[in-house]
Length: 306
Image 1 (cartoon, rainbow, N blue to C red):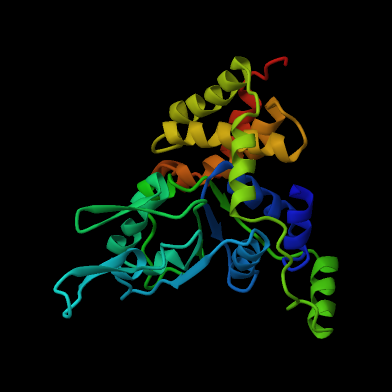
Image 2: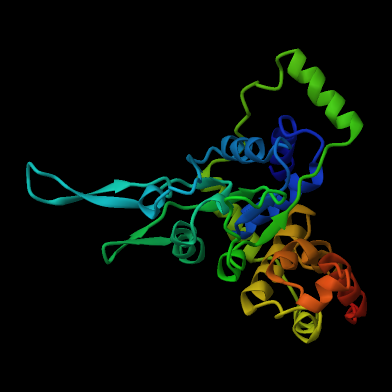
């Protein structure tokens, strides 16, 4: 079933099988994804294709400087006929949300997603409203544009399970995509291979994937070393630890195993931790790189024999 899902996505999102796998990992692990890359590489295509392949309700909001929190979470409006306030849903009331160019809107509007991403609820006029299940946010931002953008605060970044960069496709993938475009095949209907009920059941199966204490300690050793690394302003949070082990369970699950190995931790560690870490001013001046530091930390961590 998972193979059919990735095949359905890769038929339309061509040349980025590794990105597809990581997005599916986050989907099964109940996490959210930040896609950070230059325009035109398929960020929106990936989100829309995933929603159709899993047959989830899809909501998209294009963030701009004048986007309001009520545009995202909805608002209570007075019904003049009966004198009661009625809730008008915002885009958040969908199962899969595409928050397009999230760094183009104000911090106040960005923060309207915090409760939804962490707890699966939104609060409207002191009344909590539960979001549909399953619920996933895929946010995009362009890393090379600074004018008119608002960098996401650490609290917001920490709620994303992974930050992924799509990158340009390889030549053969881009040629294949172009041929399908010219033949009119790239806009074919996306095949739905799952539904919300199937996905919820798969997420329960992921939660059952075994992870022994030694592997948990291995993951924690990596987290702890980010906190002692002097080149980082601060280390990874406890939430990062939880996301790391849950994503590792999903990685094992799609690999056909019912247990997590140290390699599962290694494979998803950088994508899970990178966006939660910030270099100190001195480290930036020295030309340090977060990914290189993380790779060094992973190599230093003692791998358990399991």
